[in-house]
Image (cartoon, rainbow, N blue to C red; front, side):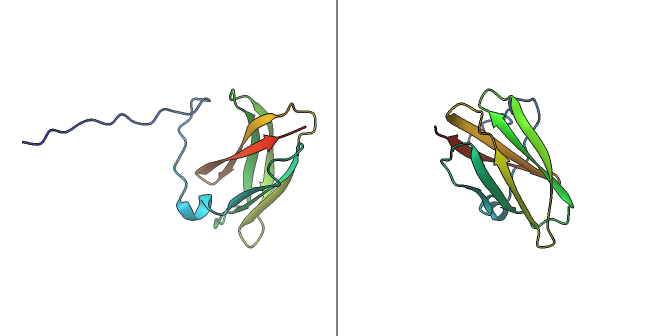
Length: 112
C-alpha cells in the first residue's frame, strides 16, 4: 500500500506572525519602482479590495521594521505611495504591504 508523509506547516515569519498567501492576481499587480534605487522609490499595488487603507512597511532583512505608514486606497482599488529612505545603507530590504487580511512582500535594492 502507498505510504503517506506528513508535511509540516510553514513557519511563521521572523516577527512570529503567520503570513497569509497572496492570490496570484494580487501579487502580480504589486510593483516597486525604480528598483534598484538610491533610497527613494514608489510602491503601487492593485488591491482589488474595498478597504479604505492599507499599510506599507520597510523592513531590514533581520526583521526590524524601519518604517510603517498607513496609505489610502483610491477608488480604483490602487494603493500608491512613495518611500524615502535616503539614510539607509546600501543593501536589500523588504517592503511588506498589508491590505485587509492579505499580506505581500516586495524586494527593494538600495544602492549608493
